[in-house]
Image (cartoon, rainbow, N blue to C red):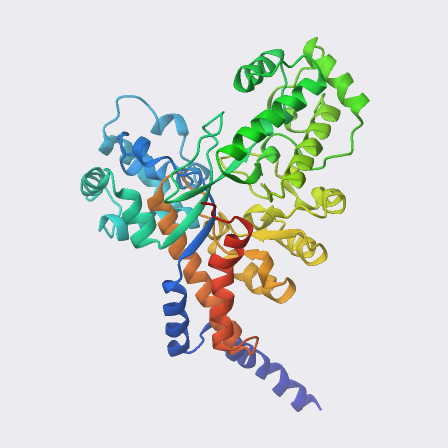
Length: 452
């Protein structure tokens, strides 16, 4: 018996290695076929912040411009002092010398991978270093002209269209229909904290705001204007300001908060406490529900930021998608598109999507937050959640080159997961191709249809 037990114990590591190798290394031919199918797909991109091309090409763009979206956050996390890299008067090479020691520590993260892929594939430079910086900047400047988006988004990325959150526009502007459909945010109507901000909303909408009903009418006016501009989705990033639990606040309680706001009796605390202590919570909650009722009446999906917050330093607990649980009961006709796979709350988001027909999981941003986590999560989501409820890609970038880099990682992740699923007997090869099409195109196209 002892001998048998010793044999079994000794065999376990070998069996485990073989099992892991079988899962991690599907046959090369299978992977090649699935990669070909995935790379041929035209993508419907669930979320972007890409600047209008005419605005982009007017700007002086260089390596540090591209590194300034997301990659810089990991470089700062590695120890870079932001004020050092932004000192006025630094030449590109001097800026690189400040940047380089921390870049070398951060260059393997998902953010850095997307940047490196973009520089390699779009600008033809395989190494980012002091010796190649001038060549990179020259290549970026040479391509920074009209036609850039058609080349990068169309020819290289094969993106059919993307859902654009144009957060820089206070009033709605119809985006370029060749590349984008419109999502709009109304958080400014939910979170006014001063009389000055109310005055700005009056100027924006032309609606007098002297009461709670006036604030609602102003939101309704902005909503109608956004519909005229082609809005296909409502968007909220309110988790950057407060937690995602929205109680059913009464009209009376919200009106009392509005009066306190007008009188200057409710001031937000300083610093991170503003993310926790909300002196006008009843007003905020009531207005958020008003927004959802508008979305419901117009049959629009609602995109909500959950999980990791951009930048450095954040109150992460505000972003747990389970805080939204009551809304899924209250608004069963609204499809809630929950962003960023809720990372690091992706297990909780999977459970919500499994429980509620009106909850979808969105991989926007996720493949660059951590490519490995995104792969693992996708495999688990496919086991737990109907595949029509998973949106497989959103670039979540300002610059199309970086969206391209992100999509390279996303396609690679999807190929890897689906190849393993075929080898494990989860699906047939033709079914894997169907799953890829749903993840990268059909699910988002159904939720955010392109309107003529």
